[in-house]
Length: 95
Image 1 (cartoon, rainbow, N blue to C red):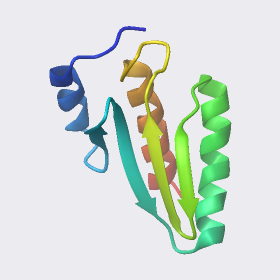
Image 2 (image 1 turned 45 degrees about the vertical axis):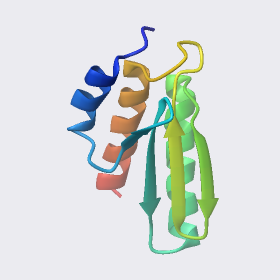
Image 3 (image 1 turned 60 degrees about the vertical axis):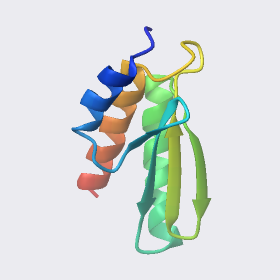
Image 4 (image 1 turned 180 degrees about the horizontal axis):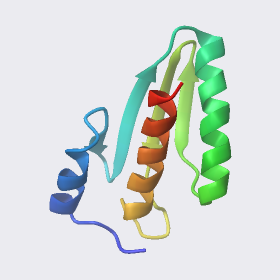
């Protein structure tokens, strides 16, 4: 998987307003109604991550979930990261 240039990343980010390019990765912080809702979404996301064999760095406090995506093998952001970001956004939109 090829590491994307900053120009390519910024073009992809036009489709993902919640996500930001920070420190060689893409990040988003999502907020839910309460801990249970947040954890339920984390579980749904976890199944998709496993299916795509791509696992985020993430951090949860109460109703907030911070997610960071980067393809370690490529040393930065790849299309694989945006595919997972799109999956996450779809899950959230359909909750």
